[in-house]
Image (tube, rainbow, N blue to C red; front, side):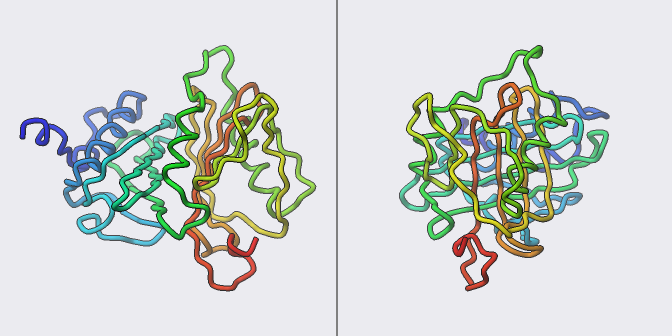
Length: 268
């Protein structure tokens, strides 16, 4: 019982940070509290933050955050410049597997939490396979990069934008590294070999709109929420890991909405 009580962390603790400005410590505490709260499924109503699931307003007391989930993997990045975080969560529970991506956004100086935005994927979504996502994600190296070898925020954002822009214009050059692998839903494009490539072809004429970034140079990572294919089309997350200016990993999750429109991912 004591262990359970300790695990029950209210997201209300994220609403009023103890610090008056945005720091890495504040953001790391926020993501730790978020993961604990999701694991326990005990969330208080947020009075100062908006809450969305799959880019739609949702009731935090009845949404995914109110459900206790057995989390098999969680990984977070922290953007001190924009005072935001991103956390990827993988749940392989056969009763209901999920892969969830959540952005937390604070006011510019680390004052009240402004937004909690989650993309929730499960069976039926684009290439969904939580077991596959867990298997391949655990094999990747997401360790902290030494400070002298880190890419700049501008480099990370430019690489992400190049990748996403290529879906609309195939002439765009993307800074792919070797090896490089794409984890799309639960499908991996590589084998773990040193010759794995992410340059495996792209559709064209598909815009990626309404981009919202979380950038963390310490992990060489940039994550983007956007609409895949149009202003109100499928909610999507793409997270990138770069080393020395080159993309090495791409993690994607897409809330599939097959409605016969050509811009939807299922028709790409």
